[in-house]
Length: 279
Length: 339
Image 1 (cartoon, each protein chain N blue to C red):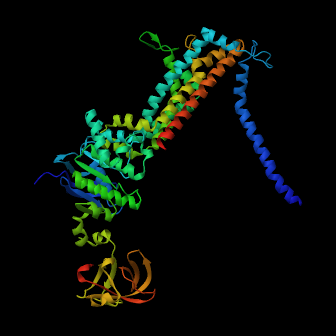
Image 2 (spheres, chains in turn green, brown):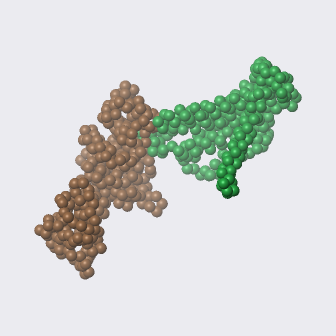
């Protein structure tokens, strides 16, 4: 066999091995942080440290027995649900308006809607904190309230919903919308009865994305919450500075599992819609 | 005179420099089926969209049953459109699709159920009530769209090239169905198409459109036999054209009454006689055979005379090889001259 032939048969093999190694590296790179916390959450010791000598669910029990931690979890979920509602409603309506109607300063408004998405969390957090620092509505201090955090989180979530829904609305067949109006449905009725069902995957995705964005957000929540309203990431950060117990790993696992659940829901809904509409 | 179901009075629509609809006036009597026929860009679909309320007028007026509607939005007009794509609601079943317009018109629940059943039976889709549009064939979708529009019993039905997305045999079948439905239900309709066969077969009257204006409006037979212009004549069916110029005649042409000056002479290919049949006819032309197409019942002879390309259909056997010279003949009544 000549050298050239050997080289030719060797080259694809080397290339294949490299491809495989690289893929393994990428997958490991993505999965390792999640797997490490998952493993650590089952540690019986009082410190986050390898090797694990005894496996147990002790810290899970500890997490749910602590009022401070369950309250932080409750705060996180409340704020995330609120954010999902605010961001989805405003984002969907804004995207529909941009898709259907022409109005002055449209492109300027587009930039304005998208801008907060590219703003650092500290800038938004600090801005909202200063602006609403001493504001009271009906005797309730706005600063430190969950509502204010929802609104702040919506600054990030809404542009995302807007972007997603704008692309989704562009895929719908305008003739179907016209057919609804032609048969006597006013614009609002058309929107809810015909348009919304056609974009249900986009809406479900929007709700869950906004939910996840809010659940994960840390900087704005740190700036805007107090002891009673602090979210899980904020409490984790505060307790990490004092003592890094596996309770932190438990909190991480709960957050990560919630995110996985949301992604699964989006996938399931998408598959369901595909079955129904595309046979 | 009774009020027409639909009346357009000098309707106008301008897009920038383009006059899409140029002062179109048209009346559709109750129960009448009027076709807007024309090539793409002739303004037929634009006109229909103005009637449906999907576009705004730049001039003129539209009345349904004698009442002006051009200021009303689409959802307040008593019209129902059958779109080219069907435009069914993908997330509603066939029955829900048909019921939609009735619900919007606040028809009672039991009556809705009755009418959905009735109109699905009319379009022969009685067993498909619970299917989703994605589970239907193209022809079935279009029949659901038809039932959905018929069920609201609009003052006028608007057909926007509803058959152009279907294949030929289905198109012919559905066009016969729509015609028999019209005979049965006597609805008033405007039907937009670029297919002259559809227009001829279905319509009470045909309006041939060109550049945003109606070139001629009349019954199909009169449009066919008495076209108002060269455009209508050539658009309505196949034709052969001969440019005749007395001064420099390069054709071996005999006419019953000679033409003076320049003219364009037209004959339908089905009216041309070939070979021995041509000898006794008053108008004759010698042409050279280019090639022959077998069309089943007939053969189509592609011919050349001077610089004109012609074709003639002939049913019988004839041994004409390419390159042979053949006699063509026709009756004066079958000939049109435009200058």
